[in-house]
Amino acid sequence: MKYKIVNNVINISGKEDFNIKDILECGQIFSFDKQGDDYVVYSRDKCAKVVESEDGYKIMTNDSSYFENFFDLKTDYSKIKNTLKKEPILKGPIEFGGGIRILKQDLFETLISFIVSANNNIKRIQLILNRLRKSLGKDMGTYHAFPTRESMLKKDETFFKDIGAGYRAGYLYKVIRQVDEEKLKEYDNLKTPELRNKLIVLSGVGPKVADCILLFGYGRKDVFPVDTWIAKMYNKYYEPLENREKIREKLVEKFGNLAGYAQQYLFYFMRSFVGNNEHS
Image 1 (cartoon, rainbow, N blue to C red):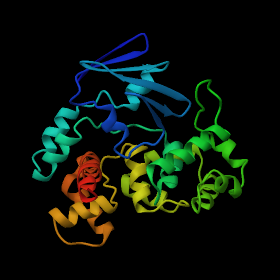
Image 2: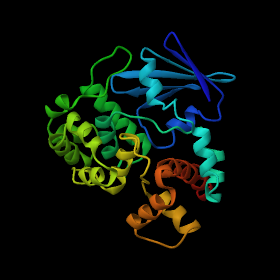
Image 3: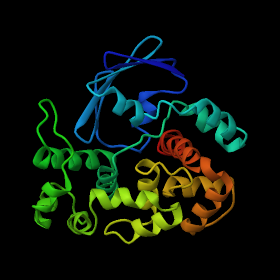
């Protein structure tokens, strides 16, 4: 994949390694809007509009360097996919969702978003996060920034219930008192197993949410979030195993530093393709 940045517009040539639908709808991010055929993505206090062209995509933003990093444009996904395709189980998922790129998201926003995501559906997750932005985030004109920890600290548990967080309201109220943005950045100095242990003790962060924060916030690719779809995949194609922690361990051991990439292709395929067939 090739790209050029001209006047804060990122021009991407080709679609094999960048497909905005695959990227935004594969479960790694919730802060985006679909506007006709275009997508608007929100991260921290920034936004970008992504428009598909005949031969690629245009990413229009006032901070091209931020979104160049956010969309992980410097990473060679063709090489990653060619390596993963050697595993037969991944051929179909990579053909189906080959345009996925793992986003480099803000740590605090990722923490809050995935606590909200626990046992939740995407429409409701997006509704809660939109209410959070509009209630506490800085007005940027056409959108609201993701709120800072300081703004969230001013609210009690009832506020989080009122925006629809349900039982997660208590988790949100507690977690922002357990950790701040700087502490989350400091954790990045830790090795993945130690960092995972730090995250799991936080309010509302279980093993799967911790792995999602590691993958989408910290960029740790030696993790493999296991949910219902991944558990089904493992039991169907590998071996019968109920313990999700053991499934995670076996998949991380199998895929190593490419585990996070493999997880995204498999999860997106299982949820989108297999899931739709099961309900048809």
